[in-house]
Image (cartoon, rainbow, N blue to C red; front, side, top):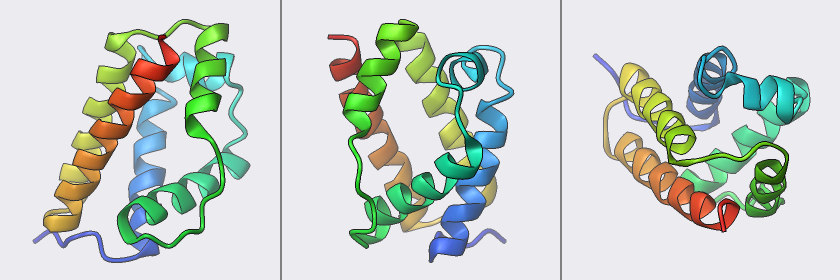
Length: 123
């Protein structure tokens, strides 16, 4: 039986599983590897902090994701299809690993953040 997201270890499991899918995805993988040239050793811990802060209000994330995505969009224009694929992979990952109130919350928060980023990045 799946458990709910309870702590940083669960966030790490979610983020690692999710980004293993995204960086190999035929539609959006190239954005991470060929456009953003993501340094995964640096990026993943920042994403742990980001999502842990989003879900558990830890205040351990300092950054400006909107600015980063807007700059990325200038290098390689993103569209609704890219954001939709990101959301689909994120939701599939959460659903495969967890079930519960926090699992639903993180999916809803991710969708809202994605919509805001799409509006900002594409404007």
